[in-house]
Length: 88
Image (cartoon, rainbow, N blue to C red; front, side):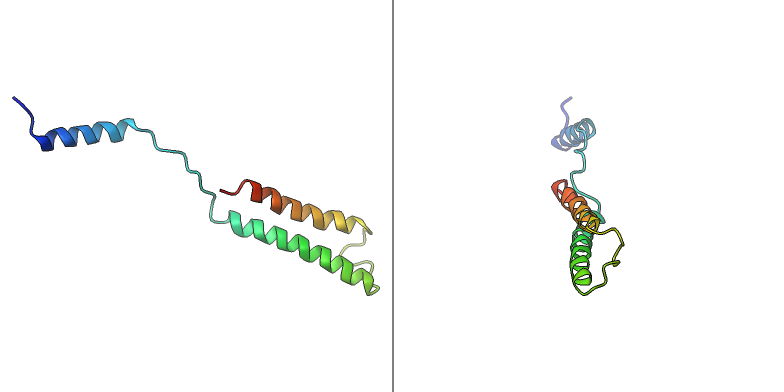
């Protein structure tokens, strides 16, 4: 006997949905973008604080490491920009 159209379509739907693999998730977690922006802003704020406080005579702030403060601020910003490259 021949099958009805409904039975054939249900059978085809089950077969194709079960055999088709799910695509991998290409989105980032919800915390990724806020963390990325926060790191870039914190790095920039650290650099600005370094310049402002050293110009006003507070050379030991934010850290007493001299010009390495620029490397710390730049490194934090670099991590944020590195995350930006992987953002989907």
